[in-house]
Image (tube, rainbow, N blue to C red):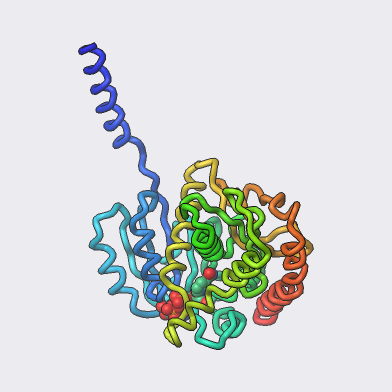
Length: 342
Ligand code: NAI
């Protein structure tokens, strides 16, 4: 028995040793808009990831201080700062994943579409640089209106001849995070167990939580479904109003975006069990873009879980039909913008 215990100890020590010898996962991540309300907490959360070796922070201003501050955290990744258009290309070279929260946020009374005129141009320019400098990277778009900025990005990437629809993602993780939180609260469930798929788009009624597909299986009254659906759709506005002019969700958004980044890096690293909801090019409906739960792998979207759209309740089916015209218009507006300007 004694020999056995020594052997076991030796084996454990050996495993620890091998752990250190194993090549560390080392992905490079760039955040464009890194000095903003979302960018800063997102940079902090990504700085904590064991999968990241380099964190490139790009913004038009104020990014030096953010990078100096973060670089003192004793986690593995190296933090580099890049300021202004002349440093944009260098911020993207060799990068595996680019997250884009650059742009202006909503103020009370504004819809996400009201941001179109400013943010569409910002996203367009940033995507051109992504196409030129890291065309193979996963691209996560946070800048609103996501329903239009993702189609804009797709068109720009096509014009540059480097579009891979499997690697272009609109970040809708916050809708899932909110749905999980609100359902767990309402039903007194352990938050960690709750998972609600959210499909469609990322604005108002285009956000469609599929409450009937909640895991674990939960039953809702019609009234609860109505209340929860509307709350999830308007949760962003709840924050915009509470901040009273100071912007929109930043901390919960950073949390959600960091979850999506971590999931993507795990997928790049070969984890075969990564599922997230995201707004992507899709043929699950007659619209060219649609948010669904997808399986992510080394090469991006591996499969769209289209079965989520089967067996919908009457309420969900109606909501799905109702969102299509608005989502279609937002997609067309994005595509038209991308063509008009070039
Ligand atoms: P913010 O105004 O605090 O930060 C935006 C940052 O972008 C600023 O640091 C600004 O300097 C930078 N920026 C502006 N033009 C740029 C350019 N050409 N290149 C690089 N950086 C540039 O805004 P916040 O709160 O961080 O929101 C950013 C965006 O995220 C907004 O469009 C907002 O609507 C969107 N958002 C998306 C959500 C989602 O679920 N997808 C949720 C919440 C916000």
